[in-house]
Image 1 (cartoon, one colour):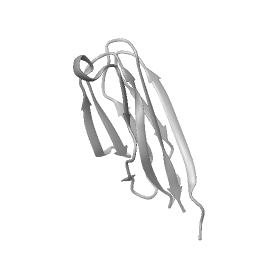
Image 2: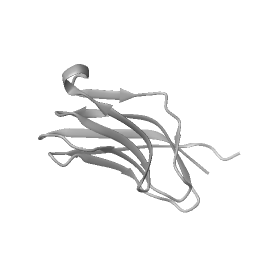
Image 3: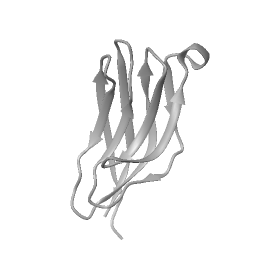
Length: 104
C-alpha cells in the first residue's frame, strides 16, 4: 500500500484575489480536505482541478466575518492535474490555504 502524501499550499493576494496551487504531478491525484483563509470583501471560494471548478462556496463578510474555514472536505482532483484553492476577489487583502493528501 502506498502511503498518503500530505500537502499544504498557501497564497496571499490583493484586490484581484489569490490562488493557492499544489503543482501537478504525473499520475498523482490530490484530495483536498480543507480550504481556509480570509478576505476583506464578499467573494466566491473555489477548489479547482486544473481550471475545472470541483467545489464552490460564497463568503459574505457582512454576515460571516472576514475569515473562512471549510474542514472535513474530500474533494478529488483529476490525476495529473494541479489542485487550486481560490478566493475570487477582495478589496485589498486576502489569503487562501488548501490542505490534503495525494495518491499514489
